[in-house]
Length: 455
Image (cartoon, rainbow, N blue to C red):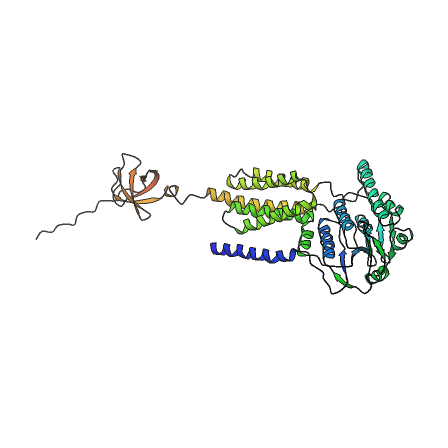
């Protein structure tokens, strides 16, 4: 068993180091001038922010003449959007934002990602705008908060447009009035730079263009005929994207809680403990990306502690019920931060299902624990009580008995009684190394002497 556990841990370490090598951002190198392309077709969230940041770093280090940002996003949370915009503005590689292909959109927070690029192009039948802030459920923000957030976003988008010499009025209307514009309208009102039916069309139209980065540096684009290299998400990007969802993150915590609970109730199982520790580390690693309320985590961890205590000192389920209540309240507090107004929330059905599953595990383990405590002790000194021994040296009241093949000193509990060789006695107690016994069968008749015959 020990060898099996060591083998499991060794394989786990090998797998970890094998995967770790794929966590680095890829270098999209190509012979001669090339353009890097990154496809941003999901929500604006911490995971996608990591992906975009890695792509910009890659473009800056692999000698790309430009980075094409293909946008098709419904928007996302404000904090991730601000991080994306800051990364785009700091890029030394020219970024060409292209809202495409046909039917794509750069809505809400996606509007800022598009306008943070020095050149913005749109494919036919695409939209941009509707950048008013809302809550995660789509409702309007409270009046005062709504005004403050809109004023901040308006100032930000106005600055982006003036930096790149585009019209500010339509961009401000997208924030203040939730205005949305199709590709024709956005080009006509000066919100974007041009229309392009494809990436090839975009690169052909901007070739030879002099553009000014946010840093003030002027760059001449040489994109015609340049090789195109697609930047794919790294393993870290994919994993972070999966774990950044609050529902997945919560289920990961439930997995950690269940495994740690099983390990505490069955010490030495190893595998549940290892899996639980890994799940908890991944949970803590990903939790920071959603800016949670850490007070909720304290309640969630308290639930694990109460479950563990209830296994060792059963309280008829009182601590288990308290643990489940603490888990529910903690989860609601943990994921309800109010920071990401447009980010995804915790699925309530996942919360109900996870609590039900943890309840079933707890009840099962507690039932085994209660049955184990009620089972008669069969080992140690306590295991001798109630056992039947055979007298090998008459007890009057002291003598010796044979119990489980061992020779024990014994003494009758009652000084008035006696037991002969071969009698059965029951162990009722122990005085140091002397068994206290009582008779359980009548004394056997003494063997009669063989008759003597006289001839």
